Image (cartoon, rainbow, N blue to C red; front, side):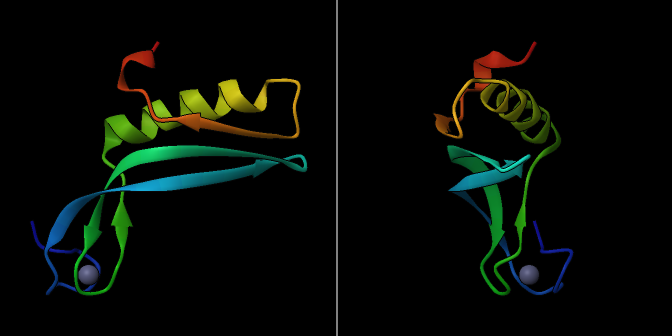
Length: 78
Ligand SMILES: [Zn+2]
């Protein structure tokens, strides 16, 4: 798959942490599967991964703590 951003790089699978901040609270999800361009470094989330991340971040940010770190879990889609 060729990068749609720069048009010359190849998208390669990688794992990256994703961070979301909401109302002064920070949530981190580690080991998120992404596609990263080997030329420009642009990272893409696949649709089901993005949906899953939404679920995870909502759950993490609804908790009682100011900072929370979770791992990406593919099975948690509601
Ligand atoms: Zn690129």
